[in-house]
Length: 264
Image 1 (cartoon, helix red, strand yellow):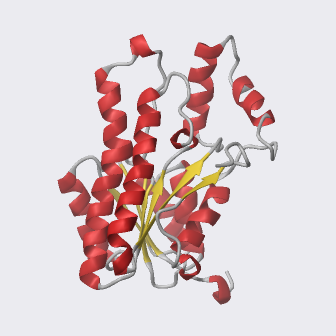
Image 2 (cartoon, helix red, strand yellow):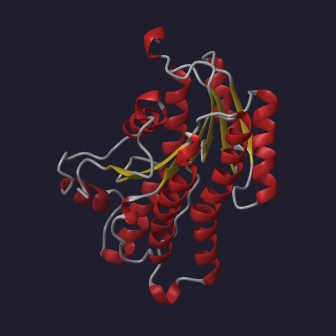
């Protein structure tokens, strides 16, 4: 990559949910632009993802951690500081979903979705911001919301609640941290070609009709103004911009990345 677009040379970037899908795409984008990257996930495959980045010459590490556990979150950023340096950009992307009718939705499912998708964002923002403030860094906190932070959808009240929560959290933290130079923003991905969306297609397809795998997603994609599903790279371009110096005057915003599905 041309040095002129290595915007994150010597910057330290943490991406939770970084072992696959959107998170891995974001990590790869930062790596291509010169960052030192930590991929974090609550699964072993995160080590393979980081190893692949290192094979291409990237300074990348992997940390297996549960973002709902405060002690593990602290240990994550401790390890990042020890191996890469104090964090400059923290992307709170770890997220999970289940899909079920109201009468079948369990309390355990509700608690898990809110814990990962909302509490996990809070704990990582809290720890990352503390370290940015201590180091005097005008850092970047970037949170993954969802199209369901714009409009809740059928059979996922817990997921919608968790993602609406991310938007409120983002706005509140942005106001608190604005005087320090730390910006806090979020993004709402739409239909993105990931393993999560393969599950969504199958689970919603069973509840909304007699759809074969892939049919429901294809039907929904036809309704997208741009007539295609998104990719990890589509999302990563926005995240990289929000982390860059060009976005220094942008905070408290939640931006859609969805091909025009939602226009507000």
